Image (tube, rainbow, N blue to C red):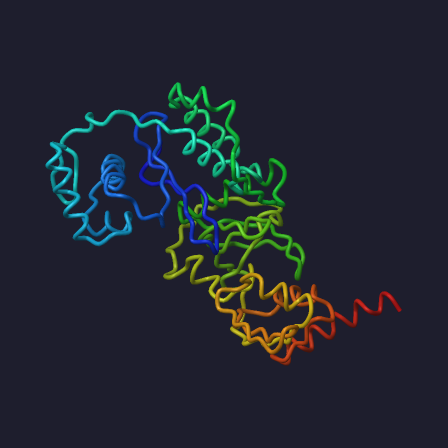
Length: 350
């Protein structure tokens, strides 16, 4: 059963989050967090929020709509003046829930929603493909006759291709068990194949799951290593949920945990300076590779790249991909590591 706002896909780095609000059996309202809504759309959005969530005050509604609280107070007055039975009792509520007709998608909304669902890592990996197919069937059931007639001739203008390493039914079961541990605050027992230390068994307090680049990862407190660690789901060999409950640690969330990380892994914060020429300089100037990077132009063919990252393992791999077009200035540890790895590669061709 759907409850409240359900996030469907978050595109990291772009600030875009799409979601659904259920408005009737099989019918949903698509919304986009960042988009500033026109008043009519906002009023309809507020009505459906109140249908699906309880005890929302003006501040909470304002946060969902991306407007000031005073705007919400004016909106509530507008809703009341339209003879909609709304009242306040530890949050805004409806006196009746039967006055709104079911909402149907137009063809553009339908195509956008299907694109979001089918582009989700959960669908691409097969981990939640059955659930997403079920959602699609329910959406199809509430399409208007006009949209059904347009659908065979319509083409989706945008497609998102997300590669995933997840395969097999076992991975699906592992994913579900880890998710259950996160949801119920239960310690999980893990048999894990680590790249650095090999196969080991350990108990974990799981906190959140995240899709980065091509794989699903989950973050949890590892009692074996006595610290927060990142685990890749497709390296899990076995998982079981224990009866041990844990009290969640404070401030454990993706934003805080991955602050300054180049990709998945963390470590001590390090200031990195790299001189780049040729192709490396052109590629780096064309796009953003890290939230706090700084690019200093030296001449038409040379730049200095500066960034603060947590740990250097991943940025080291990235820099090696540019070959002779990069020179690490600092830190000394990264410079030494790049020299070491480049030397190992060179030995294979002597």
